[in-house]
Image (cartoon, rainbow, N blue to C red; front, top):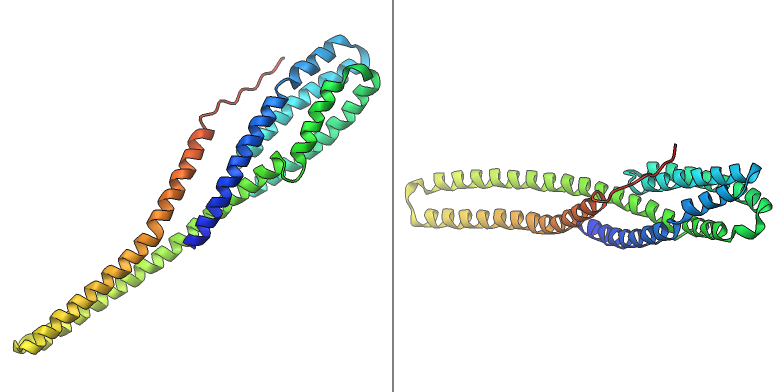
Length: 238
């Protein structure tokens, strides 16, 4: 279970790095969307104006859904967010085509945003990588539960071994009651052997679990601290 967790955590680190880069690039390239749609809405009237206003509002909703997907705690939550994003994207595509019908010469910037969205929705894109990251996080949680169960079982076996050592020592003391040198030597040998076995079991349990778990928990804690230190700002106009 510990080796499985180490492997899963390595995959998680790769996915986490990929998501951080893709999310940073997306936000940077998407940052001008609201202003571009506002400029278009102010420059046209009639149906074109209201289509541009709707697209501007859709962009705000999309950013919020992206953040919700990014901070999702379960694969089910991520799947639900992905479905909503795809529906929103399809609706935005229809509105973009309608807007293009009215203002063919002034929509190139808007088209570029939709290219970015399409790329983000493709396999290996931002949204797929977020989904993979959340699934790996869930897998790590399952691994921790399995390790905890195995640790509990190992400690239980160690307790049984300790009880057995106590019984052996008591029996050895009884046999040594005649103060014979041979019995005393036997008792000492048994005690030393029993203690050695107990120490070996304890060392094996702690060394195989404590180190990997400590490294994993430390790295996960660093990620949580980085993510929750971010400020999510939503601009709206009433």
